[in-house]
Length: 172
Image (tube, rainbow, N blue to C red; front, side, top):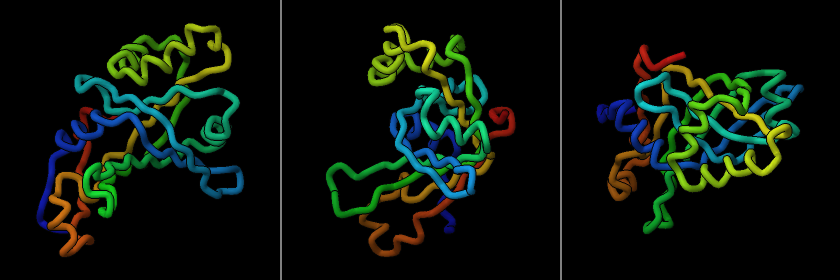
């Protein structure tokens, strides 16, 4: 860690710009199961959470039913400087399965084109086989490199790590 701090609002704003992350759930034997997912973010006026739409038959859903503890990593690749490692945001927390009837989640998914396309799956008859996942993060969010100049990180990449806290009023 170093003295350079960013606020949760900065990190949240960056997380909202993305729609892809890596979800890790736990198998019955405690080993990790990792999968890429598309996600949406709750509105700034509500509790902070991430949402995904998935099939009820997927392993991540079975794992969440058995153990709700998850981690979620959002990569921020450097589009022009390919040799530089991606910046990341990592959230730990709990996941829960949410009914497709939740109108707030539909509103969240309507804000991004790729997520609107996913919601169309529900409208095309796959309703019975789909479910939302809500990721409710712990207060501490771990970040690496996000907001830093990539060339400055080359001088000491380990110095790019920091954490921010989700405000108490935004926690579940």
